[in-house]
Length: 455
Ligand code: IPE
Ligand code: IPE
Ligand code: MG
Image (cartoon, rainbow, N blue to C red):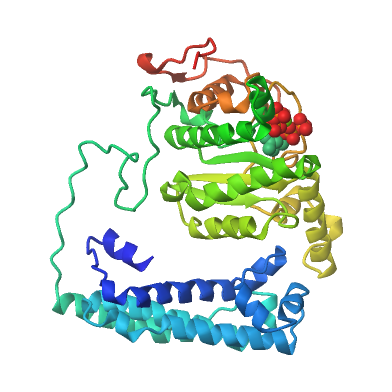
C-alpha cells in the first residue's frame, strides 16, 4: 500500500517500531472500509465477510444481511463497524515525526477513507444493493488542499533519494529477488530450460487446463489419493511459472468441479484445505499474477472463500498473468446463473428479451472480461471436457495428453502452446492455404525432447 508507493518513488520510508500498533490499526481500518464499501457486491455472490465477532454482537443482523433485509440490527451493526473503521484510520500519532511529504500522503489517505465511511453512513439501506461512493465535491475537498500541501512539503523539505540498487549477483534461495515493484519473477526451470519464442500472432491468449490424473498417479505408486493431489500442486506452480515465462495473458485451471462433491469427504477436505493453504502461503503471492476465482461459494468452507476473495482483491491491479482458478465450478451452473441474471435484467427493463444477442449473454457472465479459451488442454488420458467452460471454450482447440497431471511441468505447457501455434483455426470460414509453417522457433539449446522424459 502507501509504503509501497514511497518505495516506488525512490523515497523509502522508515517505519518506527514504536508505532507498529498504529500502522497495524490503520491497515485494519483500510480493510474494514473496503469490506463495508464492497458489502453489496459480496452479498450478491452469497458472501458476508464482515468480522464474525461483530456479527455475533448484533443478534439477527447476520441473517438479515444475508437475506438482504435492512433491519434495526443490520443498521446498528453497519453503524458500529463504520465508527470502528473511522477510529482505526484516524491515527494522528502515526505520522508524527515523519517526512512531511510522506505524512501528507498518509493523512490524505485517512481523509479519503473517512469520506468513504461518511458515504457508507449516508447510504442507509442502499449499502446492501450498491457500493456507496463519496461525491466529487467531497473528494475534491480532500484532494485539492492535499496536493498543495504535498507540493509544498516536498519542495521545502527535499529528501535524499538513494541511488538505485545494483541487481543482486546471485539471487539464490529462496528464488529470485523482488524487483522495484516488490514482485518476484518466477524461479527458473531446474534444468535451465527457457520458454520457446512463439510469434505474437500464433500465441494463444487464453489456455485452460483440466488437470486430471492425480488419483491414478498416486494409485500407480501405491500411495493414497491425497498424495496425488499434493504432487499435483507442484505441477500447478510449474505451469504458472511457464505461463509467466512465455508471456501468456490468461491461464484458467480446473481445480474442483461441482461434480467432485461425489467423492469421499476426506479427499474433498484434503483438496480444499490444500488450496486454502497455498492461497495463504504459496509462492504466487509475490509474483505478477492477478488471481481470480470462478465457482459457487455455497458448500465451500468459509475460510477458503475468504482467502479466494482476499487474493482476488489484493492482486486485482496486477498486470501480468490472469490466473483463474475454478473451484466448485460447473459450466452448466455458470450458464444457469447467467440466464438468471439476464432474466432479472429483463424484468428490470435493462434488456429487451426480443433483442438479446450473444454479447448480452457474455456481459452477464460471472467474469464478463474473461476471453474465449483458445486452447483447452486435458491431461490424464481422458478425452472429454467434464463440464468445463462450455461458453468460453465453444471454439477452443482441444489438446489431450496421456500423462497424469503430477508428471507435468512448464515444458508441457510450452509444448501445448507450440502445438497450438501450428494449428489452423477457421471459425467456420473457408480455409486459406498455409503459406508457411508456423512462424516460431526454439533456441537450439532449449529444443524439447519429443520423447517422454525420464524423471
Ligand atoms: C484431478 O485428478 C483432480 C481433481 C479432480 C480434483 P483426479 O483426482 O480426477 O485423478 P484421477 O482422474 O482419479 O486419476
Ligand atoms: C475434472 O476431472 C475436474 C477437475 C480436473 C477438477 P474429473 O476427474 O472430476 O472428471 P471426470 O469425472 O473424469 O469426468
Ligand atoms: Mg479424474
